[in-house]
Image (cartoon, rainbow, N blue to C red; front, side, top):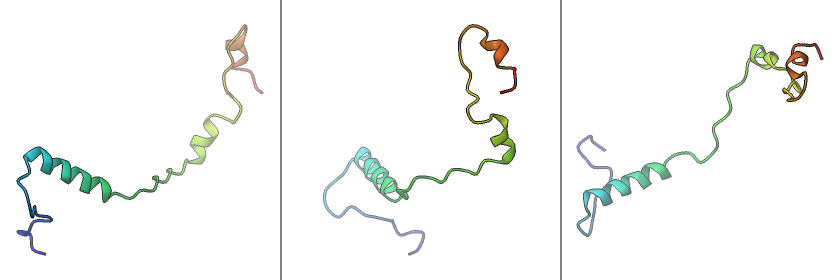
Length: 70
């Protein structure tokens, strides 16, 4: 396929510019992979920043307890 050849052509009818744009959008959407993107691996530095179960709890004295070791 050369650079001058179109990727697709209208065989019948007279579509408007909006209809052609919609067709191109559908073709591009269908050509994408359907799988979910893989999550980037988190570094050990990021994982250790907030230990599991260290969610803040609201209430009396919570600000003081948030700085104490668990």
